[in-house]
Length: 325
Image (cartoon, rainbow, N blue to C red):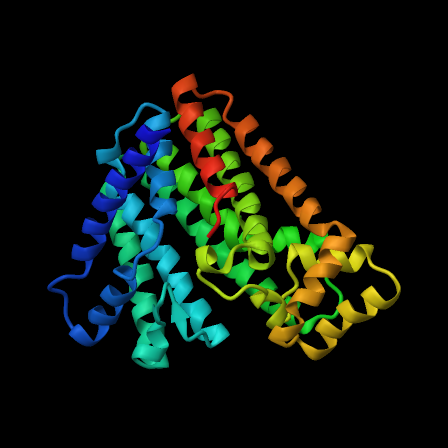
């Protein structure tokens, strides 16, 4: 496992270098300085890693996909900038969000420029298969926007089903992971079966990743998590855990859960009480079971790969679903 961690850290450093130089010497500074601020604000760089590993898994080389790996990280940061504006968030990765450091107009324009330059970088790695690569990239972007719209709709709706929630996170979170794996496989010269297999890996891993995020929000150690526990409940978000609890609850517990919807959130001093409801109803265990289910689906999908590549994708899946932050 140490060799995979070393590989990840090595490639993360390379991606960070590409991103650090991506907007250098571009004008006007008023546009590109804010863009550099968000690109250089850290992050796990998991999406670029998915691109690189998928390219290598089908017989390609990392060097053939570095620009595409940077492109997906730019796309991801474009979505973060706009998410932060919509949520009126103050902090991102421990730093002021772009619209708080500068202003809303600057943040919107800087985010849009990241998306534009992402296409510029993506095209650098296209070699005869530009149509398929750009089509996959664009489809991922479309689905992320659709997912964000559904998430916004859910805030205004009193009734949201678990099935609807899964559709939303498939689009908002998992579609991006699916796209990263698909374009990596395409750039690496993968067969149609390999592209589909790796895309399915990304999709199912992305769903598991989001449910794990929901679980960590209520169950993580606050120091390791880096955020205040129970934030989703405080904000009245309809997460997997909340919707599962609502489906299973009766009597007083159900009344308390319905109040979260009615009041669009709870006070921070109420979080522990709601966590007790979750524990009583078994929804933390339900979430863990769902995470295992989607992770297993992800791993089953990569059966066409050789054993060494299966091992690294299994390591990555384990790293994501057993993470503490």
